[in-house]
Image (tube, rainbow, N blue to C red; front, side, top):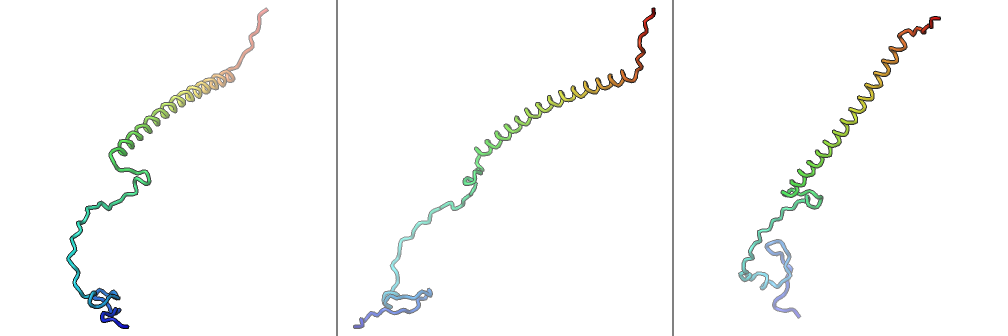
Amino acid sequence: MASAKSASSTPHPDGILSTLPESTSRSPSPALPEIPTANLDLTFSFGPIFGQSNGPDSRVENVQKRASNVLKLTQENEKLKEELRAMTARLEAAERKRRELDDSKQKPHYPVQQSS
């Protein structure tokens, strides 16, 4: 029950075991058309996934965000300067009042005598 073309498990020159009959495993392959290679850009950036974009739009957004932050800080600085001026004025007024009180305590007060 053996056929003339028996399948053998002989090693192929590439190191792969072949289970094909020897007559088919040694025949040259027909010429295949060449498959054109695609010019694929396989570079990938995780920036868009994490919300970091390096395009011109993101630069404009960053500049606008910084300008907004500078404006907020300038407004806060002006507010703090006004508060500082008010506190300084209150402190100077309190110091003046204390000096006046100290001066009035140091000066002897002579009771005014009425002449009869």
